Length: 330
Image (cartoon, rainbow, N blue to C red):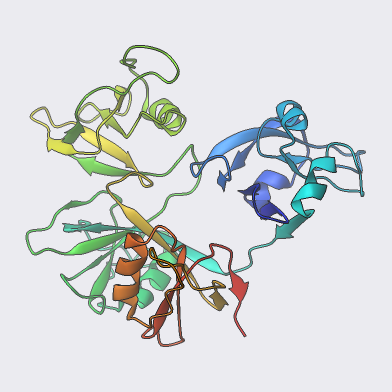
C-alpha cells in the first residue's frame, strides 16, 4: 500500500501484511516514507471493535497525533485527521503486479554458481536477456542474482549466491533484494569498511559488538553508519562502520553494505505503467529527449530532478520523468 496526503508531502509505503491482522499499539514495518527512505517501524492500531481502525501513521501513534503525522483512519472519523484537510485529504494506492522486481546493479562483479532449477533438479545455465533473466529469477526461489557479460544485457544467467566477487572479465551483476528485516544489505566477502561509525546524537564512536541482525538494525537507524563489518566466518561479531570504501581484509572479514548507500544504485521495473511529466532540466525547461534505455538511466542518475524512466513497449525509446508516482498506461 501507498498512503499519501493529497499533495504527496506526507506518505509511506508498507506491505499488506503490516496493515492487516489485529494489533494495538504494536510496531508495524514501513518500507519507506517521506521521513526516511530506509525501512522503519511505527506503532499502529487495528482493533476488533474500533471502526476507525486501522490508524496508519509515519511515527508511533501517540507521537503522530501531536505532530500531525496520521495518514489514514477509517469510518469518516475526524479524530487526528484534521491535519489532512490542508494537504488535500488522503489517498491510498494498492499495488497489484506493477513493481514485480526490485534489483540492485553492481558493476565489475559476478555471483558465483548457477542457480538450481525451480524444481531443485540440476542447475539452470541457460543464457537469457536481462529482462527474461529477471523474470525467471523472480519465479525461482533458488535464484538470488543475475550476472551478465560485460557490456551486454542479452547474455545473462541466473545465479545462486547473494554475495559477489570481482569479475576479471568485467561482468556486471543484478542482485534481487531480500525482503524483511531492518533494511536490505549486500554481502561483500574478504573486505572491511574502515573506521567505526559515530554514535547517533552522542559523542564518540560506536565500537559495540553486535550480531548481524542487531548491527544492520542499528545501522539502518544511524545516518553515520555506511556499512557493517563482521569477523571471518561469523555473524555474531559485527560492528558499525563509517566508510563506503571497502578494502581487502587480511583477516578475511566480510562486510554488508546497505543498498541505498553511495556505492550502488537501483532500478525498480514496473510493467504497464508510466511516470507522468518530463523531468526538469538543470538550466530550466523540461527534458523530453528520446534516448535508449541505457542512455536514459545514465542521464537520470546525473539529473537530481529525474525520478523515473518511461519507455515504449520495445524499451528502445525512453524519456526522463519527474514523478515517482506511477499510473496505469493505456
